[in-house]
Length: 430
Image (cartoon, rainbow, N blue to C red; front, side, top):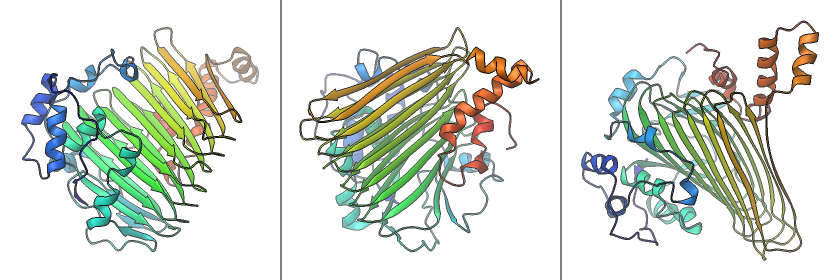
């Protein structure tokens, strides 16, 4: 891992605004900026308030849970001492390369990387870092500025071939309290392939800013799973920014549960079309939790494909938000895009806001979208009860089947983290 040194944002923000007290306190507690890019990000962050409901992309996102967290950098020593060691296991094992992340220490130290996987550094790293953000005009987005301002080190990897072992990236905050940032860069060369399982866990009042950039060369394939198991006092802000070349294939699967606040932003650009994107998302909210997914897929060329499914389980007084934007300009003829949002409402106090949207200018396309909000079906419950299954157990069986449609598509090795049991609240073993 190396210190962040990216280019400055192309869209500087007005200097009239001032940061919210929480941000001001956080910036005041940070060590000296290690680079000009980090210093510039802090300057821009200090010139604007927190995102508010006056902004369309943030009008359903209540950042109150984030601002209750201590505005200080998370102490890696505190994190290491409080995170459970048992489920993490060894760093390397057959068929899997597990890296433990804390945003500061080098997880590659002393490791021999498998064939096809290389550390990206030097001029090649500086040329690639921030390139996907610039292509989509995201350099000055508030979550990006927050991530850069915290001066994380970047885990940057170049993939030159088909990598055999699963790459498992684990960040377990445990009961550590404070704010941390993780930044990842994956550069897949033509014809390369990689499978990644990223695990985020928290058990106390912490906040994690996660920024992943990925570039897929021609014919490259990336399968990425994000399994985020949080705590009612913890927050997660995650941006997954991907650029795809023709012939590439991208699978993004996410499963989020337990967080007081989680905001997930997958941003995908097919820069010349002729690529395939597959998005699968599942989130569960309970209590007063908030889960907010804002995805955007843009086609800049013809014959691109998208298959997106987003599922929600909302219970208690939880709130779920889904906004899925698909952009099909005139250059993206013969695009084939399908987007579906399906939500289960288990409580009269829960709330679901869903907004799939297509912006189509091209005239030779096949595009569809839809959204449903429903409860567990009475006829299905009746069928199971007629077979002697108690009502509560019947409901759980239906719910497990509903969730497993997405969970089954997480990369290999996810089952060891017991995603279904945790999402169902079944108190799995640590």
